Image (cartoon, one colour):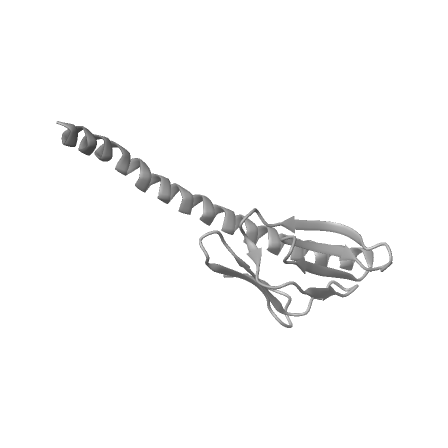
Length: 136
């Protein structure tokens, strides 16, 4: 009798556990797509801002804080942060670096790579020459 009760409980709980795992993956996938979009939008905003204001800027990636910031470098002493994207807890940038933005809105080509909760690496690439942003 006890064995039947235990098996009944397992039969009831098993689909919940399996479904919970798929919900976790779905949330991670949505977060990854949102982050890729946010990073691409920050890059486009940085180009647009620098072109319209005539100021140079810099995209800084701080992997210890998990932030990507756009900084107006017209006055290097003030370091005016214009916009930033913060990674959710558990997500990490692969490395920290700077990408310069000219006063004409031109950005050098580079790839921004981050690691998601499930351990996969995701890339947002700025193509050289055409300033096109690719999301992988």
